Every structure is written in C-alpha cells, then in structure tokens.
Image (cartoon, rainbow, N blue to C red; front, side, top):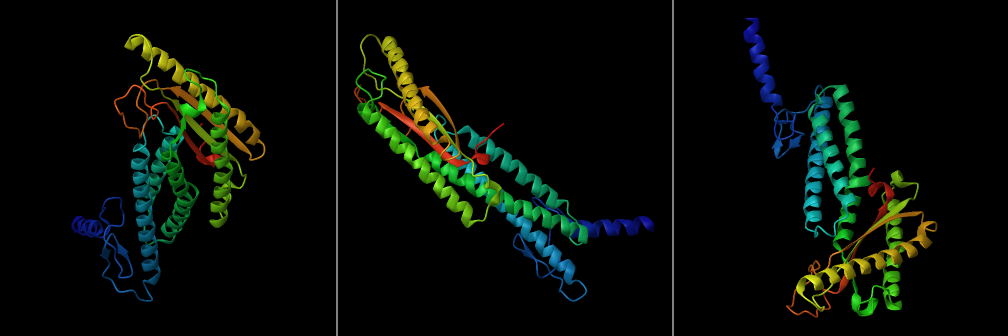
Length: 305
C-alpha cells in the first residue's frame, strides 16, 4: 500500500512539475499564470493567492531569462557577421561570459520550488540579478557590437605619398576626425547611464579598443612573389604609422576623459579589404586603404583579465 501511494504521489508530481525546455515550470497550475503559451486551470482564491502570485512571478522571470539568452544568441550572430579581421575580441569574450551567466540563472530558476516562501525569495533575488545583467551588460554590449560593425576606412591616397609609410598632414587630420568621435561616444554613454540610473559604472572609467589593418593594391615591379612581399611590408608599415598616430592623439585624451586604450595593427598586404569589391585592376584605390575598427564604452565592458 505504501509503495502504491508513493507511486501515485510521484506520478502526480511529474505531471505538475515535469520539465520543459529549461524548466521546473512545466505546466502552470493557476489561471493567473501563463507560461510558454500555457495557462493554468486552478481558480485563485484567498487560500491559494500567495502560491498563485509566487508561481506567476517565477514564470515571468523564467521567460525574461529565456528572452535574455535569445538576445545574446542574436548578438553573437551579429558579431560573427563582422569580418574576422575586424572583430574586437573583448566583445566575444564578454558575450561568452554573459551567455554562461544567463544560463546559470536559468538553471537556478529551474531549481526553485515555486510555491514556498524560501523558493519565492530565491526567485526574486535571481530576478534582480537578471535585470542587472540586462541593463548593465547585455543591452550595452549590443551597442558595442553595432559600433564594431562600423568599419572606418582611411584612404592611402590622401594619407601617404606613393610608396611611403609616413603619414601626410591630411592623414593625421583624418585620424583626428576619428579621435573626435570618441568624445561624443563617451558623452552618449554617460547619457545612456544617466537615463537608466546605472550606478555600476559610477567610476566613469572608459576604454577604447582599436584594430587597425593596412592594405595594398596589386601594383609593383618585379615578379609576383617579390611584389607581394613589398606590398605586405608597406601595408604593415602604414598600419603601424596609423596606430602610432592614434596612440599619440589618444594620450592627450587619457587624463581628460579618464580613458584607457588598446591599439593593435596588422599588415594585410594584397588581401581584399572587407566590404570592398575587386575590380580586377592592379591600380585600385579601394584596396589602398587602412581600416579602423573602433569601439568605446565603459571600461568594465571592455576589460578582459
């Protein structure tokens, strides 16, 4: 008799709490709860109102957590649509960390006993953490990805003399124009944080990360191998010159804007730059460029140990 009673209780529990996707919540019990398109059947009265409220609260938090994870997955897809040579690796690391933490929150919510006071208290704490994660990290990281997608091009024809890796006055001016956008980006971040009352960034520390890639066209004398090697060398020297000028101008902003920065550069030689079309000509201005991927944001979002 004991065994059959235990079995019936076990079956009932499975029906009530059977896991679905990520969850303890299952099929909702009360009519006030709608979870994953399903509505509970039990009427709410004075005797079960507390339990109904706890169930509804947990269901809402679980769905919000699922939406957060979906948002991160979409952000990951957007990030990987950027050419691999232009991606800011710190964003990738941040996305992985956020996805892992969001999944941990979902797992913890799934372990909550929906109807007990202690379970409800735990779900409320997890809801607060999830909300902080969304506004402190997930939404802002989306803005960083959009910034990373905007690749800036510096034309070699105005920035360097033919065959030279020394920046011209116009080249330095082009870099100054890009530097000026950093001040605006920081002002935009401060406005965002003020509007959302986000105190997690209250130290006002910002960081900018730049990835600079130099490219050449297919011009040059000698055989193909010799020409390619010279163009590779020239593209790297030009990228280095652009990086050095960025660092020089960024140093002037470091104290003024409480800004840290990281600048890396690469010579890409005769490779076709992202978003450019090969017109089949050796002399191709759209290939003689230096690309700049630049993101600016609160330091906590762009710092990787």
